[in-house]
Length: 206
Length: 312
Image (cartoon, rainbow over all chains, first blue to last red; front, side, top):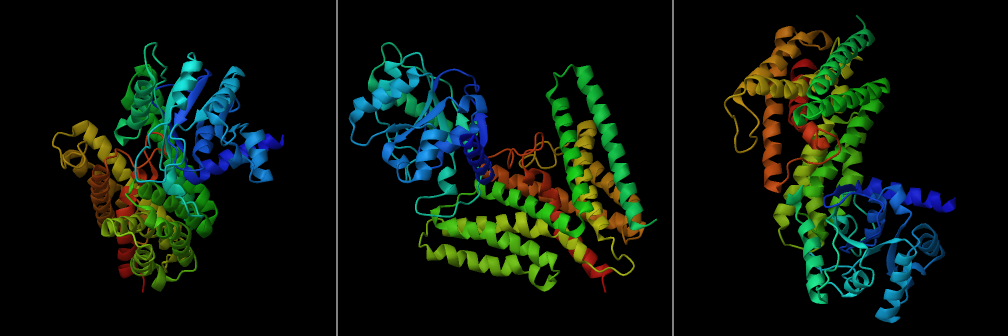
């Protein structure tokens, strides 16, 4: 009950502040298992993806984030564990442990939200280089679709170091699903995924 | 007739037109089997008109406060669309927060307390001087002039100009006491129907493009037919205004011309920013600014013409 109320409050707040608009460009919001991978420039990123999914998909979609982030206060712990049901990755646990945790979540039927840049992008670059985790995950669970999601403007709503969000409009663009090819190696897939995400960042696809 | 009867007669007329428009749209959609994008767009526009008329009616029921809240919210949505598309940087964060949370509410409060001496210069003097100071203190000089100018112009069109619609309620016109809401109805009806009539005349008789680089769908025939027929509508509405029929025609002509050129200016900005619509708020209409662009340019001029010639 409390979880439902908190979830509604968070999505309503996110909609009010960012007026988030969702652009399903390369796929529809269908109940298939997916790994949504997105650019990461703000703490609000996964809240926006989560908000823009229909209720039925939202309940089975879990963000992946560092465990330390969720353990900083009781409120965060509640929101992380009970509302978002985040897949918490312990710091310093190694790539294998992270992969195991994410695979376990996928095997439990969940879809995931991941940020392949690995850290928040606070630079002037559009998109940082990807880490390789997305490749290993997609390779380990080849039936799951990887869907690129470009999040526009959220870094302007609340830039790093500011405390007051400004109510600019954010747009989420969902691209076409992709999978690892049979012969595809790590750098080829990572390149392809990053290019697909960058292609969504250009405003002329509207 | 009393003011209330005037208002009711006016809304009854608008409702009648909307019912006819919806019926025509329904028949067209039924005959086309739902395959025509033009007809689907027409029906989306008619639906949005219902919503707009309903919102204005509710605001009128709540009187002065209702109208100030309605246009204050419209300003907020318009400013948000405008600033979303501008090329601001982190150094503008505090200045933009000030525009949303201080300047915008202050402008509407000043209109609410009828402080003409301040609300007519608050944005172009005080906001325009203080905001660059706030941004300069952040020390980021890259594109400084362009960034400042874009935020200022955003405030000008989205807040300053729009706020002159509710400001009409503060005008004290002898013999017209308590009826200023009808001036708002006159302005909005004439300017918005000019948009619709230009579209209709253009679709029916449009041959010669009037501004091919800015707005390829606008034609000379649409412009002339739309502006003249909307001005005739303005003359026919003289009974809700303090003007004579001839004056009503002249003023309607002036505000429809301002509305037309306002639409061109806003199109030029959209082209510069590489977008087709300002936003996606209203199905079939784009964003708030796409709907308001003509009112934005007409409102301050209308306000000052009425203030200069009809108030003591």
